[in-house]
Image 1 (cartoon, rainbow, N blue to C red):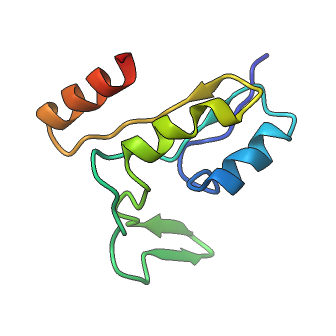
Image 2 (image 1 turned 180 degrees about the horizontal axis):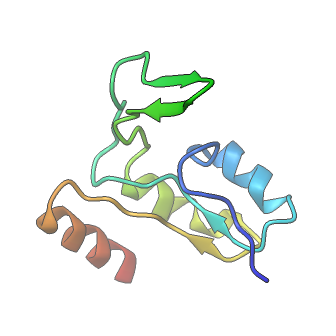
Length: 99
């Protein structure tokens, strides 16, 4: 069985990703990266009640270059989740990861 973190919560910064590297997780999965860094939607962007929760985070992340540049910091296999805002951005990010 392979278990790793979900993309999103507590996997945005180098420090958070190092915590996953030092956990029992089999892999490290980053926050979904966009081509450019994003602050995300204004707060509040998360609502939790007895019926469930709703979030509208808006993809806050440090941008694809940040996640590429820290790739050698980890012992475990490292996966960068990518989420371009359009097909062209996805293609640019894939090209960045291939080089």
